[in-house]
Length: 283
Image (tube, rainbow, N blue to C red):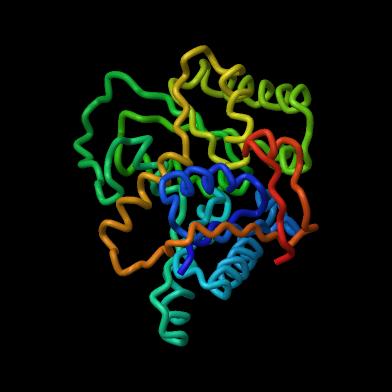
């Protein structure tokens, strides 16, 4: 078996790198659906269909566990796949495969609480709100998954999402640092204007944004904590394997990178982020 990691493009490599560091002996297959990237501006049913196709491709590559390293796919498609498609696929194939996402680990990290926890609503006045900003794609922002799920667990955290329509596409296409910095600064300013002040903490709610996390740090007030999805996902997957020792993640340290787009060496930003050029095969 191998661990599959799926994203619409190269952003999921931020999660992939942390998983490789946490499970160095495991076999991994990464799939970027670059022919259809970015997902953030697509409709819900289309996102579900594209995500399902990507998961099936990774299952066909021998992955029994797939991590959706894409906030849009996880926010819009994961629950549908888990509840209405995956049970039938398991029955038909006799495989114990599963699909996980990155939003649950992120919310656990943001609240400091396990996913199963739900706060008791006693109508007590909250003396001080912790303002949490979420920078994400329009589809993730429209899903309101962070607002809904965090509110279930913490009444002292107020969530404000800032949709960034073009940012993932720009990163995917290798835009320059100065151009990206201007877009990031604009979105930080818009979020500040809506809240009335800067957020106390921020989630980079698209894995592409982790590649330019330094630009968000520069645009936000010094010391603003960023909740990092890659680390939260690696920690959560380690706990998952403790609970599910039946999953064999492989032992050869295999690494494959697939794309539905044009195969070859990825852009300079990815090379800088990864520390070495990455060559993708045609999916």
